[in-house]
Length: 284
Image (cartoon, rainbow, N blue to C red; front, top):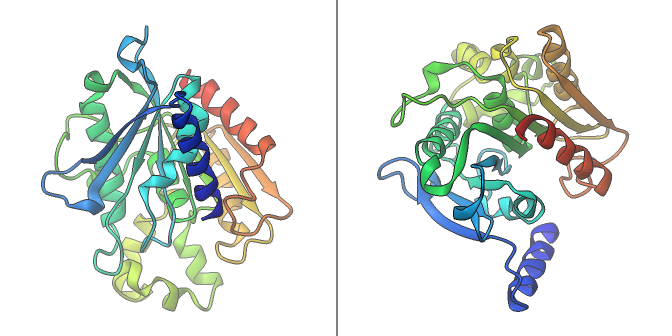
């Protein structure tokens, strides 16, 4: 929260001195009649319409345990990347327990397809999409990066793929089946996410695990996870990295000795530089 507050102060000060860092197109519904939980914001360079080439896109997906959070967190990514020639999209999605999985996956896929369908309107490059998320958002970023799972492409713009070309995953769950096997509290923790017990929802739980969908066609990933994370165990990041490597997909794993489950502590200048280089390599 302090990170977001500090960011807002920076943005407001920049705008006050006539140096607006971006143009924001806010509260755009990405599904017809979807309501406030199915909206996105787009952050663009002030002169985006005059850009010589369509802009590569970074989609930022907020965390919050799949039950809370705000798309405004994408302003953090926009402040750094829009001045470097990217468009940044912040999306939100339906929350549990009212809408259990796969609602969140369906929504994020729909948001990506909507952005590609409206690429010309905002001067976006539909073939250069990256995704970045933390915690629950990291899970959703990894799912999009894994690709495939077309059964969860539901609704509009189905002629367009929801695949992306690069994914940055901050401490996101990657294998729920493994989590159930290793954590006694998993059943209680995930009851509202999957809408039932492990025995009742085993197939869904497996299908919501990004590692299930990784193939050699999956996108390159940069994974950031701290050893002392007490919320999402480090084994989740290690498993994602391992499965990507076995599939011969480029994967860089930043296993940090400390940082806990804290996005602010795991977005140091050094880590942000690595993220910037990763997106530059795969999107530019």
